[in-house]
Length: 456
Image 1 (tube, rainbow, N blue to C red):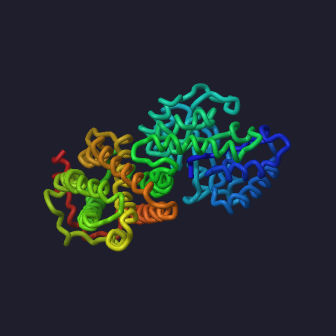
Image 2 (image 1 turned 90 degrees about the vertical axis):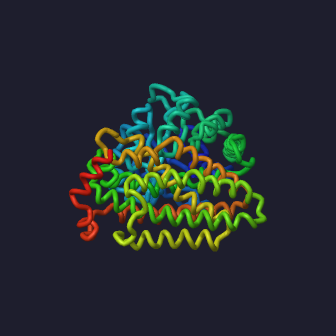
Image 3 (image 1 turned 30 degrees about the vertical axis):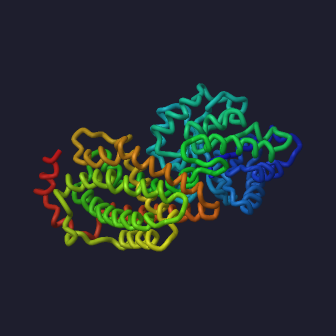
């Protein structure tokens, strides 16, 4: 979705209709469009937005409105892109609701860090290189700046500023989710060809990264935004705020951890079932997938068990845990997918578990104060470089497997991944709520609270 992101500029269109340029660019490979109008009257802006929305809908390409939340609402656009001096993301989200996309430009690394606390879906490095269309910025990030931003942020990163066929590949090579292009497409006499050439540069850069066959969009890129959309409600929940600042009551953390434990046990069963299936599988990717499954069973899962041993002192008492309906539905869905669906679909569901914990753990680690915080053991595991590396290898394998199947099957992988992520989000949010669990709270006495504190 974010791979090739067109940002319009009517001053570069000349006498050509804006919608015509945009449609040609979409035919060339543009995956998202931002309508940017800085000076025209609002009624003209709205009219353009309505026209583009109608046209882009037939291509399945999202329309984003620059700055103007009202135009986004009235036109039915898919979201807005905000600058640092525009309406705050908090206010924009309250108006747009939870389902619209919100992007945010960042101009320094402090803003990158701050964006992690905001309810936005991606950030734009503004600019990567100086350009005539971005005259209000003071510095440029450069390729190494983009690389650093990707490492420090839990949000998908888009590069903007002098993005063209020569520079796009370098930005993608720095593991950005995409590039936002203005002049190279809008000023081109052949916008379709210009977009296609930049798309080829993006794909060439991705093909040079490990395990990715040429000409194939990386699976991780396709799932980046669905993953972010599922996690943002979790990251903005008061539970997470209390976890970060050390104010989270132990009975609430323990309930969530118990739910996570039983999900982890379901994952272990799923991996063991996959191992048996893969030993007799004839598909080309069976070998690399079998190695991954065994690595997870032999290395990653035992390290996760150490966290549960630390907080529970061994296997939790299942009788003290009333599993919620969302949690049960989640476990049954994972079980069904692993046992009945094709292997690449099963892999996608398993990866949703790993990537949700990986991304949330990294977010907590980046914003966590370990002093006097009893949950540092959990953070040190799920936010660790070791866990990030282990799950990163799993993501690379998913990229490789997705490269072995057709586009329709790859999209089925994305759909199953997205459904699992949203089911995990629902289960987490249910377990975050401190309500209707008097029996559990009765068991969590003040004495147990004090014992948990002494463990640190």
